[in-house]
Amino acid sequence: MTIEIRPPNAAQPADKQPPKTSFFRAHARALATGAASLALVAALAAQSIVAFPTPVRAQQSPIAPQPAAVIQPINPAVQAFSFADVVERVRPAVVSIRVKTEATNPRQAFEDMPDSPGGPLERFFRDFRNRRGQDGPGQQTPDVQMSQGSGFIISSDGMVVTNFHVVKGAKEVTVVTDDGNEYKAKVLGSDEKTDVALVKIDAKDKIFPIVPFAQNSGRVGDWVLAVGNPFGLGGTVTAGIVSARGREIGAGPYDDFLQIDAPINHGNSGGPTFNLSGEVVGVNTAIFSPSGGSVGIGFAIPVETVQRVIAQLEKTGEVVRGWLGVQIQPVTRDIADSLGMKDARGALVADVQQQTPAIKAGIKVGDAIIAVEGHPVRGPRDLARTIAGYEPGSTVKVTLVRNGKEQDVNVELGKLPSDQKLSERSKPSTQSEEPSSLADLGIAVAPANDVGAGTDGVAVVKIDRNSPAARRNLKVGDVILEVQGETVATAADVAKAVKDAKQDGRRSVLLRLKSGSDAARFVAVPLGDG
Image (cartoon, rainbow, N blue to C red; front, side, top):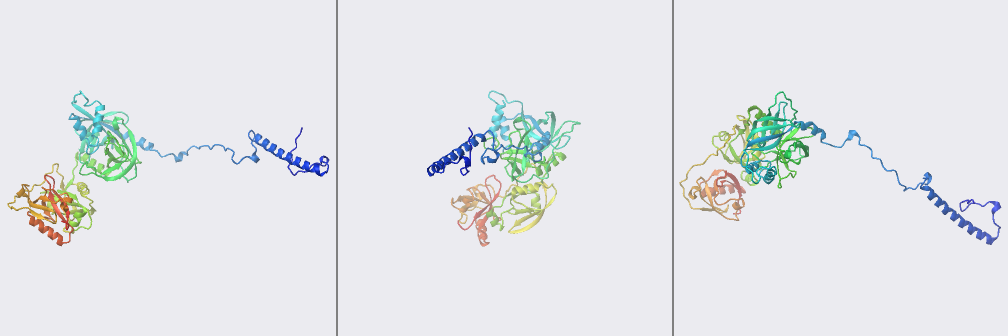
């Protein structure tokens, strides 16, 4: 039987039209309407059944599943960022250094290692030594002890840069290259103040791969790679950025470190810090760590310092530095005000040693050095680094502030002595005086010799805990040597200097004092609220 489906308004054939009676027409109309509805449902059902095995293009559902997206391969010209090319190029020139030294107290030897100034890594080093079986329970201390570090080759004949503390006291040095070969080596020279050493590999007719120095140590935020020999693993690479520049960490008088966050661990010392061009921007030296492991705060000697030092080590085996012959301290805001300076800058001369370039040039205690050869001096360490960068015998122009006025003096620098001796004051006083009160400062003083201080000046014998002097950390026993640049021997001298400072409109008075065996220093004490 054939079922013919038509639209609801389709005309019937003439030979099949029903009799024209109203009753029949009504029922016929109803039957026709119902049949059309059934036919439409059947058609839709037929379409839905056919749609799955045989898609109908003209009536495809707008939410029908789409073909899965195909992931295209990365264009070789736009590869993901990687350090691999740099590492492959520089790693052959990075070496491990094994050092044999005479046995000392093993605990002290590890405490003295400056991988972390102040000893934050001492517990870690002790645990590491014990895990290696050194100085363990029931074991005797050997006649020699071994240590290891890292380095990098800078000349084809085998010149290697490393840290001073890596080769300190070395009796025997072995350099292990990246290909596993071992070579005997000797220390050509070292500099403890900057922690730099130069080692020479003993290998004739051998050409070594080298890495170049960068022109500068880069900017904060630059990518860097640290390569070295942590824990004796050899050839380990870590990545990070330059976090800061000019860091002072108390390692020496010429601190000027790069701070990097590339992980550095025990054994990385002496290894290179590279930029993305494969150039050395620093030498890994120390870390800060409260726990003994790397926490992302590492320090590297900047390339500018390294190059300057190794040039002298290669030439003479030692480093000679310019010398001024002064003790200096920072210029605080209060000190600047007491000196009549608008800005707190430079380095304040707290003492001048006898028979030194500073004495010959006329530099005096209380002068604030603010520039050398026209280059501003930010503070004491900046001045020390600047002067040390000149060769002995050089004449430099030093700009200083004295009595509120700037002036220039020419200084012929000397050679920094290996053992500096401070000049001693030995002018006995025969004066005797009862302690006198200085209400403006909140202290009582008496001649230093009268209270057994054994020096010139006046000693603080009493201090008001709520006084300006107490707030500046003056203590009973401190000896005041000068007030506003004038030497004092009695309380009257101090009172006069304080009065003069007030008349000059000073808000603070500058005291030069000495505490026990410490070096002399300046302290600015506010006036007017004593």
